[in-house]
Length: 96
Length: 97
Image (tube, rainbow over all chains, first blue to last red; front, side, top):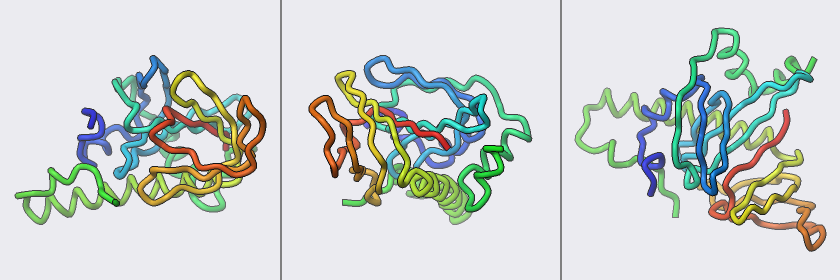
C-alpha cells in the first residue's frame, strides 16, 4: 500500500477544494481542483473548468498516486461550483 | 472482499474523533459515488499502464472500485461491445460534464 492510500479520511478531506498537482505511475502528471478522494479506493477526483463552460473531470486511481503537491486554495465561488457539480439537476447551470 | 481504507486510525480513539472521521468518510464517499453516477453513459478516456489509452462508455463500478463495466470499448484490435476493466490496470480516467 502506498503512502497516499494509508492516509485517513480526515487527511484526505484537507485536500478537498485545493488545486493540486499529482504525479502518478509512468510519469503521468495531473493538475486540477480536488472534488473528493474516495475513502475506499483512495482515487482522487479532479475538476478542470474548460473554456466552453464544461468541466473536465479526471479520476486518478489511488494505487497509481505517487506524489501530491498542493498549489492553491479555491475561492468561495470555486468552492461553490465544485460542491454543486454532481448534485442532481444542477450540473446544467454550468454549461450555459 | 470489501475493506475500507484507513482502518488503523479507528482504534483507541474517543467517540468524538470516531464520529468526525466517519463524517469525513461520508462526505468524501458521497461525492465520489455521485461522480460515478454522473459518469454513467458518457464517453470516458482511460489511461492504462504501458501507455495504453482507450475510450469507452462508462456503465458501472462495483462497490469497492475494483472493476469498471464499460460498453463500446475502442481497442487497437477493434470495438469490444461489453467489457470489464480491472481498476488495477488503470492509472487515470477522464470525462467531460
